[in-house]
Image 1 (cartoon, rainbow, N blue to C red):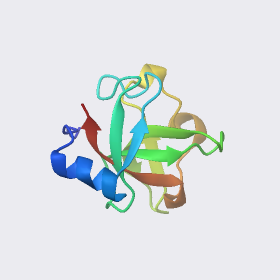
Image 2 (image 1 turned 90 degrees about the vertical axis):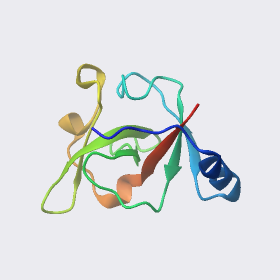
Image 3 (image 1 turned 180 degrees about the vertical axis):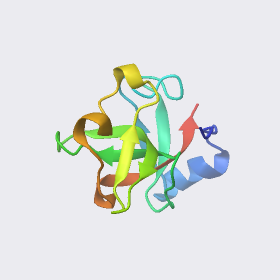
Image 4 (image 1 turned 135 degrees about the vertical axis):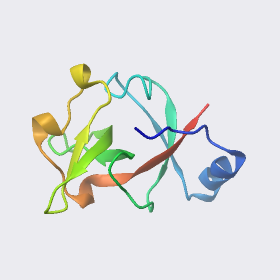
Amino acid sequence: MKDLPEASVYEIALVLLGSRHKYVCEGKSMNPTLRDGETVLVDRKAEIAVGDIVVAKHPIEQTSEIVKRIERINERGHYFLVGDNLDDSNDSRHFGAVSREYIKGKVVARLG
C-alpha cells in the first residue's frame, strides 16, 4: 500500500495554476488512509498504476465521484477499484471493473 504524502508548497501552487484539483473525500470507504471530509489533490494527467488512489466517476450513479485504490488492471485494461475499508465500501466488488475513461485522476497528496 502506497503512502499518501502531505501536500507540499509546490503542490499547493499547482492548484492555483490549475494543474492540480482539490477533492473532498466523503464517507468511510478509504479509512484509515483517508477520512471523511479530508481534502486531497488530484493530478488528472498522472500515470496510473496498481496501488494508486484515484478519483473516478461512479459507473452506476453517474453524477457521483468516488475515491478508491486500484487493486488490479485486467487484460482488457479495465481497473478494479476497491476501498481500503472493505467492510464499508461500494466498489468494483459491487459494480465491476471500470474503463480508463471513468478515472478522473490520481490522488497525489492530502491537504493538511
